[in-house]
Image (cartoon, rainbow, N blue to C red):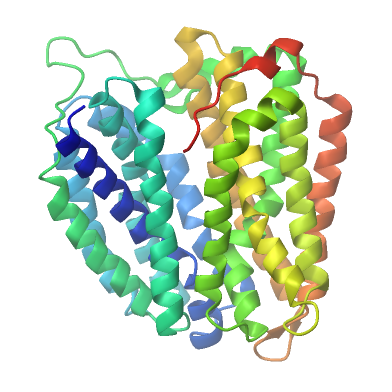
Length: 408
């Protein structure tokens, strides 16, 4: 891969995650404090990404690999998405906002897989080259949070408009990316099936008990996980934490650090203990949020944010690596698609709805909430899954030897 291609791919990743980080983190604060949406409505809005994650594989599997160059599809999706984001920023009722936001996420979510696949096809050694490019995405998310938090825009519609402007820039920039034509020519198109698109061919792996336990545990733990993504920013703002969006980027900074040290932990802990530590970190994070405050116990809030690196890397990244090691070569892509559908799709969608119902149940007055009780719910949920996973999941000694790229 040439230096010019590396710069282009890195810029693409930066803008890709800048756009997402600009609107997603602070949306709950705008919807709750300014538009006075209910907790369930905020949760459902956050869940549009999960719903789109369940639907978008059809687009990626049936269109992107067959009919158009990847960079042109990316450009079209981001430019259309930009217009939709501006429309979303002008909505003031839940029904219209939800529909418009769902249209946007249906445009955006396929671009996550497409940007990865475009990058892989330009690389000589993806295992070595991709992590150093993908880390620019995390940096883009951090920059978006710092920018919006510093300007004090969290309770306004401006973050969606900033994301829309970034999406225009990204859409135009995609036209300058290396040409990446469809993998399948008109005369050699394989038949698309529901099984291949959603990864259902990997269901045969569930015959092994430990893999089935892993899938079930991953699905269950994603339900309490969504409490953080949907409501953490609203929680911090209700506690009058200044520049909450900026402070939340400490989580992405810790994510980069723990990705760097993951190989060291893998050699000493192995898959099962890595997954258990990740689940335990989610329980600890919510417990810290439940008992922390913006006074003498503010350190608990910072600790909960900084745990994001362990929460994400030790659970999601380790899980992806585990799936890759368990699936035979011809089922690896299907297995990754299946676990993404179960966790980022179904699990996160149920978690979005459930988290909103819990937040509504502990509302105080017109805009306040009993956050102590709210955070104890996902803490208890994650703890139950942790115990069940520890009792029933088994890993082999060979899984301790899996290789891990230094950064993702």
